[in-house]
Image (cartoon, rainbow, N blue to C red; front, side, top):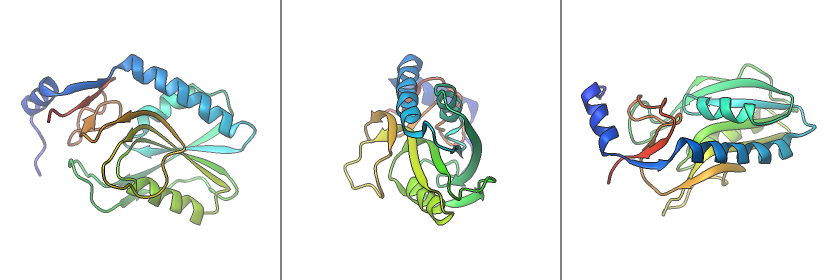
Length: 184
């Protein structure tokens, strides 16, 4: 699949619907921070960013909490610059030991649940004491999702293809401060 041209990206942006503004996202992230702080207070926690989509949320969420934490990241790919997911490919495992730790997995969106379900299993296999999942968007699906609902989520979105605030459209547009949906 070839990359979209800059003209293609401009057309996508012009025809997309604004779903959540930057201000709505900030309020949601601050709320998530309050919930997360309550869950990890007095625990030895590691915040693990799920790259690439979770980087924006990880940065903002970590600044919204008043807890001493360590950071790490992992990188997996299901979408690989496409708009539909495939099998999970590991690109980078966390560097820190997860054994006897409280692990907070931070990702952009909970869509079908496959990615988060596999990441929770990975943490459990590596003997984490507790795994907390945090995503900005929880997608409302008509079909059943895999695994458990995220422990913390900021906003709910209908079943549309969304991009911005860490989520991409064919590898682009992650840097947008708001969240948009492709027009139906």
